[in-house]
Image 1 (spheres, one colour):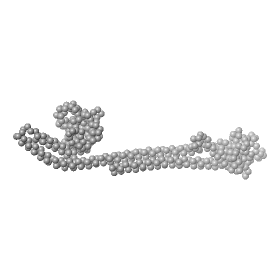
Image 2 (cartoon, helix red, strand yellow):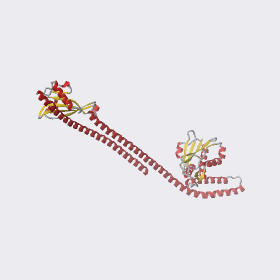
Image 3 (spheres, one colour):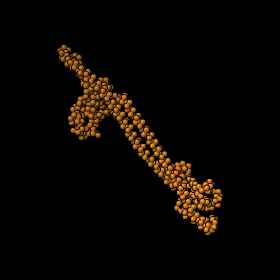
Length: 466
């Protein structure tokens, strides 16, 4: 019970480690996603600040170009600025477009001192009044302002991936220290934001892949660890069962050896006295069967004691080269009278070129003999026994298949228990002795029911180099 408790405790400890490991993996994944999102947000903010600075520099350059290439030449030539005149408008348009060429500027709008649009890439806006709003007022106070405009669906805006991203900058047009107007520049930075989103997607995707790989590896390790723990637990339980069984057999062996020794000596005296009594009774009463009964029962009791000793103290096999098919033939020849009396049929399916094995032929003969006798007892007249042999994975496999009634599940569970028998006579040690003999050859024996009817006794004996 203590060992079983230790096994359960080790399994619980492993499950606790597994729980903490998976929890840590989930926390690491969530933290990685959060960090990647924060990094992407930080990069977006940097992009916005850099875009504002870039727009301010662009406006400053545009302001310089308008003064040097438009205002001064027009004032010298015409004395005043009138953008309504086609010539001045075309010159202003030329200066602005040449200055902002290749700078990805979508819209430029100029406001005069009275908040009236005097120039725009969109001709429909020219002449509109009070269109600048708050940002115009700030620009007139010599402040440069920028704001971000994003357009897209709800999900696109939620995940910071809008269809369009634009920066609108208002800046004053200065002539020395005097603000003569306001310029509005709209730049499209959608491509830059899409690059950031791709970077964020790459980071998140990489995290998914890495964490997925870690999860699979961890799952494999955990499953493998669970299997190892379960196998070790099963092995420990089997070893405990074998140990208890061995202790049980040891106690039985010691008891049987002592009792058998004490019984066998007086039993021999009884048997010899009965034989002597029989000789004397022949002179007085030749028909008396009492001495014969005493001798017969003494012999039967001696056989029982022999079974006890064979089970309690199995013999060490005398290994020498032998052939399984020869041992089976010897068994069949020995049992020929019984086979003939009950009209049994023996079918042999012996594989050709079976290798020799190192075994005790006399011990295997006795083991096979017990199997044959059990099969005979389970069958009625005209029954059939099929014997098959083959080589499989370095073992010789022998199957004894009978056409008896088979074995119930309840009996199969107890079939190897000492002293268990379903017969009215016998010690219940026959199969136990056979099992000991097979295991003494490093082999295994199993008993199952066939699909139709009857039992199948399978013996596997290892093929050793001779």
